[in-house]
Image 1 (cartoon, rainbow, N blue to C red):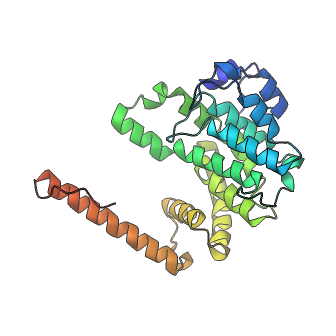
Image 2 (tube, one colour):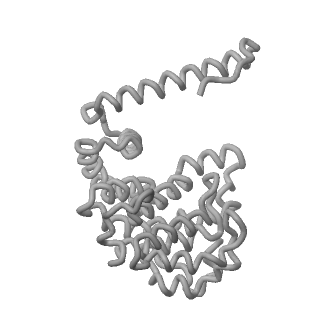
Image 3 (cartoon, rainbow, N blue to C red):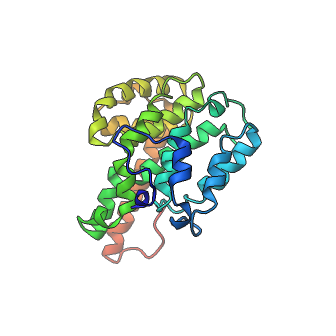
Length: 264
């Protein structure tokens, strides 16, 4: 598990360490990343709070690149995710609403990364892992298990941004909160998230956010038909058609019917 190499110890379910303590007390050089080990991470992570927006953007790229590759949870992912959570409400990012081309606001990018990482460790990913590797999958994938255990702590920081003044921040916070709320102690928050989801669907045209929110509401048993717009319906029908074509191809292939590549 990643966090065993930090002298700060495991925070309680809803408790985040101080960001500076996390930087100072984690043995970053011993933790595996996508490209090696994390000795460069402390400098990059600290620079995310730089007063210069361009420096913040470059540092965010450098830090997240170390732990982002092929939907994998690395050893360094957990302390990076904790650090990101601890700084979400830092004054250096609170008013960072302006774009720094070609980058989005740092706060939005951090929330998007947290959301993507949470989806990479969600219940569906666990189910897929267990189908391929057996019921002991999470016992072997200690990094994913560590991230999943810390979802309440990360959620506590993301939750504070659901009512942010900036629309992009609100949307990214909601999309990040949805997979985090799969944790058993957070399921009571789903009613609140549904309220935010209804508002997003009434006001946002962001395709990614709408897809994530609609999928979550359906999974939680809500009828979304009155909330879908024409684009939502077109996308849903296209996905259904492609799935039917793919399933038909696989069924035919099993009986020797086709030799072409499946439609994607």
